[in-house]
Amino acid sequence: MKFLLMLLGVWPGVAMADHVYRCIDASGHVSYQSVVCQSGQRLDRTIAYVPDPVAAPAAATPNGSTRQPISASRRSSRAVAAGRAWKPQPDACARAKARREQQLQQLGFKRTFDDLSRIDAAVRTVCKGF
Image (cartoon, rainbow, N blue to C red):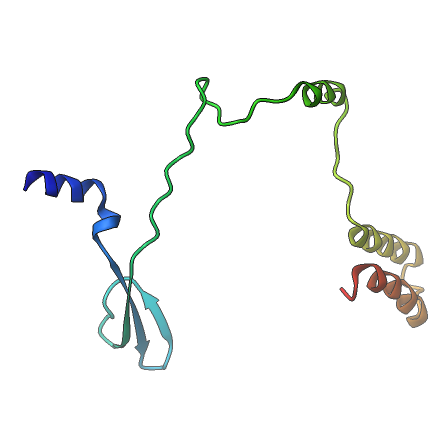
């Protein structure tokens, strides 16, 4: 009996199912909660569920790291690249939007509707409508 209680204490998620209560208040607002509805609320339905099991942490290597060993070719390429900073290149859509902002700054407030249409059309073409 003690073993069973200890087992249930070690794995509480396995032995217990939870409930979600759908409550509606007087003004018709719906709320989902893990406790029974309060006074002034009406219980609409109760949903039983079993929570997903918690995944076990990944096994660590002897030095405490979970990283994979680096191959010799990758190690040498990292050594060469270590001296310079790597910046990811913005995608074509981000570059087009930046170019649009630059053109708008150059035009200032002396821009016409035709200017705006021409600049925005280039961005829409590259960004596929966005």
